[in-house]
Image (cartoon, rainbow, N blue to C red; front, side):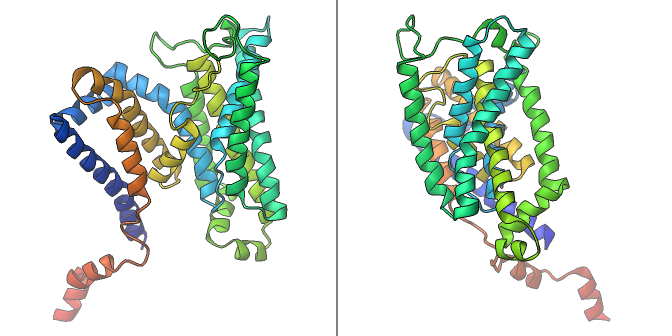
Length: 360
């Protein structure tokens, strides 16, 4: 049964990717390019060349964190759709402290900004958590509504109180140099990537080696049974949402101090790092290892779009098309838990032991 589950999960992960690339390949052929050449060029420059790989890992950092933020709640069938807003809140908080706090050593300044981003993400996550845990309010509705509220609040603050008068577009002032994460060894990597990997290891242990991880899975399978067995489900929901908010806030604050350095209205890009995290978590099966691999793959897609636009006639927007196709195909369960595929294979290819017993 365990092997069947692994095969099922592998099929449900790989088939959407293959289908998305296949349909994308048809579009590329219609443009007049060879899809194998285009895909090969993209993967070569983003995963198999040192500079490209480093850039891919750099941009994978916030995606890993937002993917984990989604994964920890989805495992318990709690749907935190507010990761985007929590991430933006953490980024904005880190930015404001980054340009207002002066005279601090760089390590202290960066640490304070990161911690503030984490706290902000947790505060934004605790509101829907309490409503879900104790008033049974649908968390999807609350977190989605909070997303838009947070985005609008940050837009107003960026246009008024915290607007940089020297900028020709809507943005905050840049963070001070003491709050900027330096590049490591002349590469595009900063300390944000090692921090992300430490958090990843911790989350792996939480998912697979801790009591909380077991409780999360139990709540996801059957919350009524978990409650009946003595588990405080309401408390666990709050804890999960707080962890999710902390990861989201860290993703935003880390990306701010390592890449963006000031808050703009398009800070998160399109569709947004939080929404990207949802796709990554789905692609990775909500498991830490799967999320790590999916985040690096997805980052390679995004960073490889410029390569496609420069060296081929295919517009870089093809990557956005592939991302949309991934979402479409991921919504399809190719092999569900009740499929007869495995039973048919067993009937067609009986085990060696059974054959010997029959012949005897």
